[in-house]
Length: 135
Image (cartoon, rainbow, N blue to C red):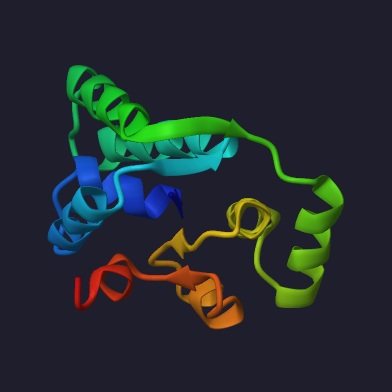
């Protein structure tokens, strides 16, 4: 099981330079979980892509469905006090700290490309490439 944030799952459904490493992560660690927040964040990113990159509504809807289906569980609610503590200590957003808190609670890693999260939580957060290296 692994916690996966929005920027990772979006690269699974919208092709980018990092898509191959995300696909490898999914093949090796197919049990993806995230806080409930991930659903709104995915829709927000896809709506932005529709406005900026010409992704039409049908493509955005299909990408959204594929992204949601990648997860085993998106109903996790981290303890608010822990999220706020992590945010205060790290300077990361409370949104990012929800993912960190879920990973802590479950005792697993967090896959992310977010540089600040990677710097502030190196014991929990790692890139998909780091998580699959040597496997």
